[in-house]
Image 1 (cartoon, rainbow, N blue to C red):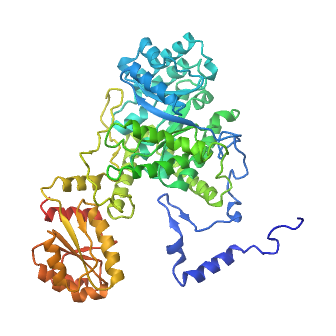
Image 2 (cartoon, rainbow, N blue to C red):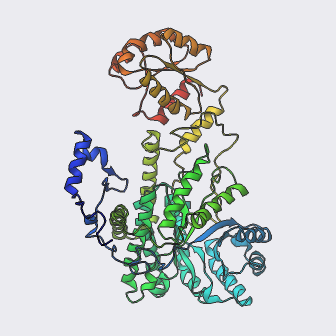
Image 3 (cartoon, one colour):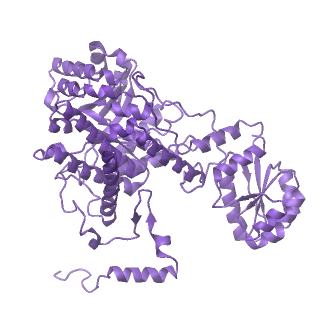
Length: 614
């Protein structure tokens, strides 16, 4: 029992690991094969060791300690399970809210029309809801936030609730309206001081919001959301200091509503980096108030990667996103229902969304341990790398005049929209996979009338000069439009796989081609193989094929492709699966259509639709 386990084994060095990897790669380029170049602008190595953490900041800090990289909580990882409600009728909203509180929700978000605010409205909405046991969050027209604060404070006082214990927020964020709506509502920022004063009796209520989830839902990369969120929060601190509010008082009222995408480890690292950087920023304003340096985050699973087709896959995406948020020690989480993009979420979809979080708590016990990711060599490295990229962007925005200045000039919108366009281009080329959409689509699925919903209305009015706005088109939207247009055609196109020659290659290329073409909503017909191209073409025409895809090996295309093309003639569209060495010879014979891993899938399918008269 006195002997140390494994003491007889010598720990290999990094150089020995690299030497072993080089042998296993058999001459392949290490950088190309194993090093991941992220969209955030840095490389991720295939492995990390303790020595890689020597210079990293915050590695030796404890949970609940400045700079809070390991979270604000010291002895647990409890978070609020939140669900948001649009309120038109206070009575029905109250009934639903009470029901939700009995089903595991302990944080409610109410979106209220500013025109309906009144004492009676609040009393009816919050009847029998005990705010000392549940977090309450409110959104309304930005110009009515002060009125809402007064109504809430008066209501809580009338009920003799313990004001100092109540937790919640009012979503005051005029800058988000500039970004989303393209309207200059910056004068409303001047209401910030009055809002903080109106909530003076509710010290634990947040009222200055940074809704960087809007950037996430507009296709921002992780470092972009981080850097912009930091600049966004700093802008509000500067604005409110200018109104005469103490820096500490501002910092304690700020709440970050951030998105979380499917990049599992990177998102864990993002939230850890965000707390680290925000603590450093706030400390410059409040060096003696470390508690004010804590970052408070509500994480929203992303809408950007949600899809209309194969929508249950959205559950897989939101589950990993919720896991990232939970493991990174956020304060509350909203899981977006899987059907939100095409309908008002059903009771079933909302129940599943709630249960996704309850599973993480009650079965996976994610709420029991603080910062389980702490000490992971990879995550610590990612935290440091993302922090550096986010900080770099933060400084660029600050040096350019600050977040408000850059938003009014449209530079923030331009940068995010550029990223969104690049991601759409990458999805078109299948460099970014969307499971069930551009990769492994459900061959037999129909939309059944599902259509993208228009963006939900916000409770307010458009005022001010028109500015640039964020493009919130989801990543799958182009493919969905294509597939719906195919469904609306008079006839569903049929794509027939003419498989011939080498067994392994024809099967692989047929599978690839079926996935490629089914993304447009075509009916695909695979086959076991044909002895001659004439036999294959005859079978295709008998099946009513509009597209015939020859699937074989590169070497055999020189033998099979041209005879098949000539025999088919103009009776259907002829496609070669692959990019064989004899492509020029095939093109000279008149063959125009090739599909392979480097094809622009979206543009190719649009072109085929046009040729088919769709």
